[in-house]
Length: 236
Image 1 (cartoon, one colour):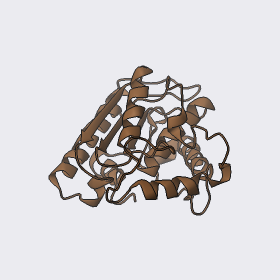
Image 2 (cartoon, helix red, strand yellow):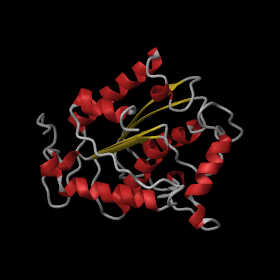
Image 3 (spheres, rainbow, N blue to C red):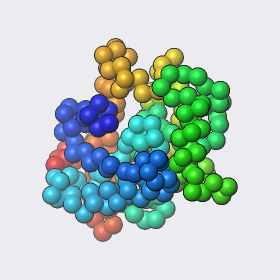
């Protein structure tokens, strides 16, 4: 995924250091395995920041689709457990809500649709079936969005995750969190990766890059016991 997703752009065009955890997929191990794997990778990044050549006060998370949902869940988990302080989140067309929404219900779009969505969630949540689903599994369950990292996302109108992404944006904004978002009408899930040659895909990638550059200049999150050097231009 890293080789045809936005992660590649971050390295090649923006000089970022990207760590892509090979988290366990739902078919191998259900929730909370993937979240635990991502949390472990985040702790590793923080403790190896000097070796990686990264700033400990500018650790960011992101991902597409299920990876976007994990990025949002990870932000919530780290905040609630006083874990790694995350400076910025980039959950693109994220998988956030295990319940049907107005756009994930009766959706027959290409790539991802209602049938696949139901199957994916059932596999991921199978070990907690019949229990209360926590926000770390299904981030849309969260009630308090205050204190979460600023965010950028984009999503298209024809895909199942449109409504839940809008709800996530709205909840962050209402909690006073800075959010930027782009909406692409009529397109299907992961269009930017599957049709990278299209003009709209190139535009989406370029806008993602601009918001990442903005985040590098404006968003910092010091780790415990550190001084946050805000508004400096030195990155590595």
